[in-house]
Length: 493
Image 1: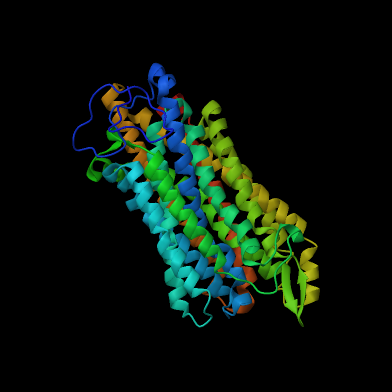
Image 2: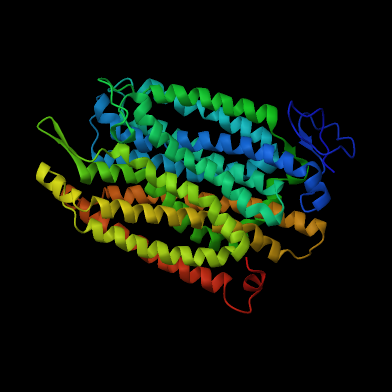
């Protein structure tokens, strides 16, 4: 039965207490959590898990939005007086993604040490650092580029939130519902990218929604920072008052660090680079690619497509598809869905590549107009790839707890608890490695190692490499988890 120390917060649902909590617990610790027990689950466990999921989603959502403030603000820096080149803008986006990926490792191990609810409060408050600095910096065009890089790096706090949130929610749900629950949790965070990409132009006065909202005479980029300062405080307060810590998920980091030595941790990391790494990398670069090749201002007149009208679409579609990828994987098996996703992702990327080969540098209104003829194909194929990354994100995260449950040395309560703890740790490590795609993809598009006249060629080469990677991921998925006669295939992970 669920055992809460102290009274639940207002409106909280909890199963009846079974024993007094140890005195070392201070607030909102659940001492006995048995989601695999149908009586426990239907008798109050589901409601408690759902409440924690809701606030976890909200906090993670705000984290993703702060993490990706730069994916849209880079395209508007010129309008507020910053004179950065395309290469510098891509690097700003890359730095935030790279630091966020690195932070996912310590954030993962913070949950079993501090408790999921406690760490959610802390991680939400950490978002105040980059948002406050953002507000100050973007109001002064003389802010050094190195300071902007620092603020971008600190925005990586928001990227770390995903790992701790997923590790925490994994412990709340039974095996039969993990795909859907983890998919919802991740999608709620992922869509934070789309929301900030949609809201930022509107909030700062740049217009949006395909022209339905007109731009103001002056862009006030700092306004978006004020908005996310308030939302970060709200996320911290919600977690403090309405979330819980699970005592059975608390352990020393050294007890779960053994997953670093397990082959499946790195196999799944390789696959997750192909799904989430692509999602987050493309989300950061999509708007800038549209701005660089499909729009321009010549002799004071704008020509082409407004990047702010389209940049949010990719992250929106990828986020919406994620929980459905988890749901389908719950029914058919995560590995099967993942294999199909990678095949389709490779085909979709070839479609994007075909469109990119029709482009030329957007150095004149004529070039922009010529590029515009393939914009529809570019947009459609790119959004298809985004959709596949979303389905794949859901299916791969269904695979992780299933893999560790299959590997469990014993199927008794202790063995399954150990498998859940290791799977939660694996979720964090896999998400950390996968998130490096957010650093690598924009950097490959920026290509600081080539001259200005070779940038388009670098983009073409990058898409060829991405296609080859997806093919490799499909092969690895089949060999590692779908070959007939292997334990993983028999278990339909």
